[in-house]
Length: 431
Image (cartoon, rainbow, N blue to C red; front, side, top):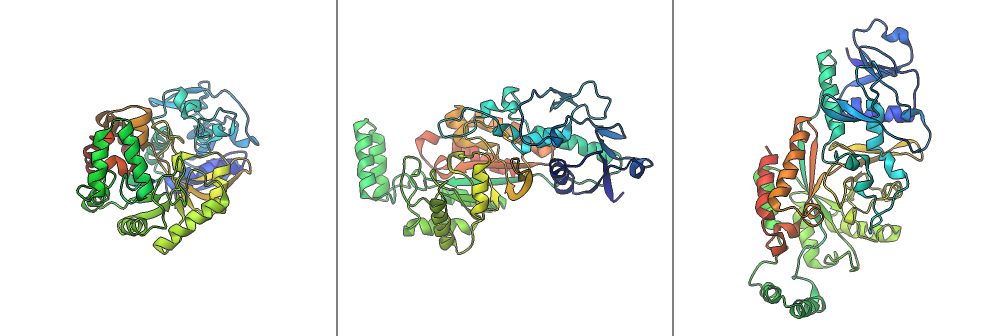
């Protein structure tokens, strides 16, 4: 069988979006959608949406509705995996509407509903259905996909999943703690540390500025050594803000030292933009993108929002207008786990316009600042939490994207123990 037949009495942009991603992009098999029963009557196997067949899936109605509406989503279980849009009365093969469940999570349907944003204007993880049911750290979409994959394989459907992949990424939003900050900022730093009685900081700042010790945030040689040893090609998201603000404290991209660092990082990885906190202004975004492009001598097409300041649909429409093709912001800044229920990449679906866009989203599930500051985890506990998520991603042949910062992998005492942990996870996850 060269293609899988999908029988459904209806058609919609939402259904096509799910089928294209699930079958074409994830399972690497062609599919044919039909509403003609005669085409499937004599087939040994086909997928039926909303009717009984060899592989039937109940229809909850979400894929035919216009716009967004509030509704209670029934939950359940299938093969020991939690489910959404469950239908316990159905006689179908799957006891839940897999297509609606996938669409609900990867379209981020719930984020279009009313919610109370956090202090950074973000959708809070606590408002999500996955968090409310304690499923946030399970890639449920990937688990559903893998079970469906096994079912299709057992019925001789030529489906194939891509191998598990690990992609380390870094946000470079404070390249150095003391060096290259200028006289005024360092004098202010000396005064602040002295007034608070932090004499160790005073001594450390002095020795670094006198070139007697390495800047505590300078972990770039260490990071490069890991990539070389384990043949990894990371993505570096550079904060290229042209002015210093409360949330944007990197060294100016106009300085020689920052430009040299960016070119060094480009040798073993991909350079991407980390738009500054206030870059929702088109002019600011364009300036930051333009100077980064001038430094590396090529177009910037990848980005991740600083502080994960992501508001749907505005942020993604803004990125598309700025010629960004791939975004790595699909995760939470204040909680570990899977914002869209998957580690796999997918194209953003604009719910208000009911259309799949060309913007490719790459979800992350772990950021060390979240583990450290928000969840108050020790390095060992954070590694255990990540291991649990990673195992499921590897078992389901999905993708793991981690977010670290250079400052957590240096010698700063705030991050004691994280450098050792990171080397261990790179070694484990690169196999």
